[in-house]
Structure formats: structure tokens, C-alpha cells
Image (cartoon, rainbow, N blue to C red):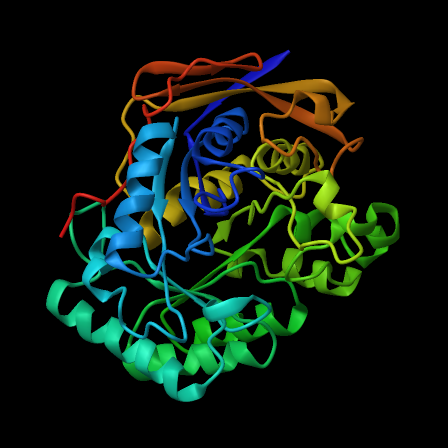
Length: 371
């Protein structure tokens, strides 16, 4: 038996569903799932009900997280097509600005070039007053994070260049997108990007087997797209789950909502890739610890580590052992070579051998007291 000790991971893209969709997940169940997956910091997306798009909504969400979270939580603020710059007074208390230009719902879908210009321009103007965040400092802004697929990606890249605003592209899934980002980086654009484990380890070849449990946005891509992600590993800054839980009953509906849980399977999947010599441990630490902390200016967590058991023989993933409220994974039954044994956060044991030890509210809400 081999035990590895690694730093607590950052998952820079999760949907903890509170407020508005607590039957799927809330701050307690979602951060419990994070600790079970070796994740000690999560960055929560703003597409809740209501969307996190005003200072009041961000403050209300921070209070919910402060009462329930068992790991550290950063909160994105959202751009919407009807509230314009309402989020700006709270910009320094968010981990970043999230802009949806592809495949989302309601007021969060930004669908005019004029409004896209305004959002990038006003974020950059605010940054000239307070700076961009680095090294966990109080105040400052995080990057503009975009859900921008295919033709919308070059729009966002060029607006970032025009206004000199750092851009983070979430859940890249296609050859065309990762190759475009590679060229943009080579030309000096201030762009970083992330890729999910489900796009690294699943493709359209798995769609029939998974059915609605494999439906997410971006959709599962082709084996060629997946190959391009692995070939361009050096271009990928972050591995993040896009943890987006829905109940199995919702997934069985005629029009199931897109999204899959992922907090508990990311580290076992990535360590299995290390065992298969597709990744190194340094690759994981760079993309799940070092880079997300740098990109979002996250504070360090002293005396924090994860102990992981590397298995001599792979064990199939079991839904019954999950902590997420929805209790299922698209990786159920997949043989994995690692499991999280224990997690220590700021010197305190918070998870051990399948049991959550942390108390609700013991996690920190990042940046909410800043600015």
C-alpha cells in the first residue's frame, strides 16, 4: 500500500446550487463532497436562483456559505443582460466575473456584442482603480471567466485583448478551441483555460452507455477532440470539474437538465492517469493547486494536506459511497487506482476514511470581507 500526501486541491468551477436548487446540492453537501474528493477550496458559479448578480445577492450567498461550508468557498459574480453593471460594487468580493455566451438560460445569456464590450470595458475600468488580485491579497479583481464555445471564443479573446482584461476560458472541450487558445497564448494574450475530467476521460463513444447521465454542457466531444486536449496538455492551466449535480429523477425526465457531479471523482481519475503514465503528480499539483491559486489570487491554506491511497489493484467507483446529495456519477463502475483516505485543513482533521469530521460553517468564505 502506498500513501501519498499532496496539497489540498482547488476546484475552480463548481455549482453548489444554493440558493434556489437545494434539493440537488447545498453548501454543506457540496463542500462535504469536495473534502471527500481531496478538494479544500471551491469556486462557486453564479447561476443560482436568483443569480448572483448584485452586491445584495452576493452578500446573501456569502452568509449561506459561511453558515454551512466545510471547505473554503469563493463566489463568482454574474453578468446578466438585464442588470448591466449592477455587480460592479461587489467586484472585489467575488473571485471573478462569470460571463455566459453559450448554452445557458434566462438573463445570464449575454447575446449582444454591444453588451459584451460593455462588460469587458467596465471590468477593466474597475481594475484600473483597484488592480487585479494576486497572492490572496484583499481587494483587487479576479479574471473574467467565460463559457464561450466555438465561434464565441475568438470574440472573447479579442475583447480581452482590446481591454487588457485577463480572460479565463472554462471547460474547453474541442480541438478547435484548445488550438485557438494555444495560438493566443503564443501571441501574448492574457488568457488561461481549464478542462474537465469528463472531457478528458469520456467522449461521444460513451454517450449511448451513459444516456442522460452523460449529458452536460459543453457536450461530450469526439475522440479526436479528446486527443487534442491531451496533446495540448501544456496549454491547459487548470483541471476543474464543472460539478453540476442534478437528481437521478431529473435526469430521467423527457428533457433532462445538463450537468454531472464531479467533485469526488476528479482526483482518483487524475491519479489513475498518473498510474497509466498519462500524467505526472506534478501535472496534477500545478493544475489543481498552483495555477488556480495564481489565476484567482487565492490565499494559501496553512497546514493543509490530503492523504491518498494508491491501490495495487483498481477498484470500481461506487455511487453508494458518495457525499454529493444526488448520489451518482458518470464514472460509476469505472476502475480507479486511487482513493482519498484523509484530509487535514488548517491543522484540523476534516475527513477520514469516508467520514466527514468538519462542522458546518468551518470553511472560510474567500474575499467576502474585502473591499
